[in-house]
Image (cartoon, rainbow, N blue to C red; front, top):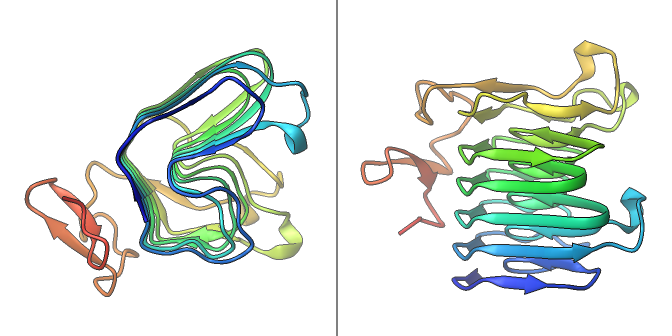
Length: 215
């Protein structure tokens, strides 16, 4: 599944480059189009927030990527904005290179706004935000379940200068999400990105997916 266009909405909704929320896993999808939302959300709770994502949210999304720019400007309410997903569960071998920004309250992350579980993902896109209550991270706006579940978000990489996550579901550091800042996305810098799924692109000067190759 692919998207090469853009989306714009002025109503409370889930806005996605490829697909909306699904209980099923999705794989080998990508979005290259810009996505934007400008307007109000009728609620300030995360459960009823505007949800904006580059690709989509599924339980086990894998081998997907977003290169489009994502821009959200709220006049009221809350938003969850993610480069790949708004909520990542078992999200693996995915990446985002598009700029992701949120003006207003909420969560914004290079891979996911709320990143519950997953590994072997990377973000090179610029993550920015401005708001009274805003949590932003190069990988996630908020990461993890709790320390009772162990480390559920790990082996992720990013090139930006921000924090890996805006907040963590647990204050106990051994069980917080794991991500490494690197100078570039290569096998040498990102050893947890397996050659089974990834290959180096001379055109893009970084790793891309073998079975969902970026043009």
